[in-house]
Amino acid sequence: MTIPFRTIRDIQYDERRGEYHAAYDDEEAREVLVDIVLAVADILGVEAQSLEPVHRSVDTDVFERCLDSYGNGEDRSSGPFSFRVDDCLVTVTTDEIRFERRGE
Image (cartoon, rainbow, N blue to C red; front, top):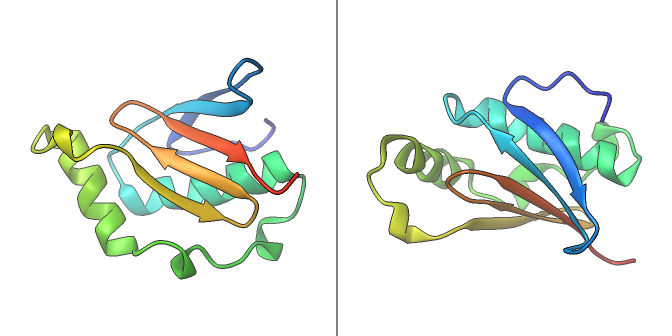
């Protein structure tokens, strides 16, 4: 990955699982969402502006509350938060983000 992310770090491809995964800092949910879009664009090999707007597939307020709960330990039982960004399924858990290419 060549993009200087603000919140995502250590993006790695897991051949066994067929997906990318990365650690992230949950300090600022909106910044995480921006970095997710940039990472998806990089993974798919396209410009970020060509992706469908993320607000069409994820409620940004719900996403922000979910990350807030992960960060402060309120509700770790709620499970992962998944959504699509173009041809990529994104899953956010308490400790990582997974990116799975779809439609290949």
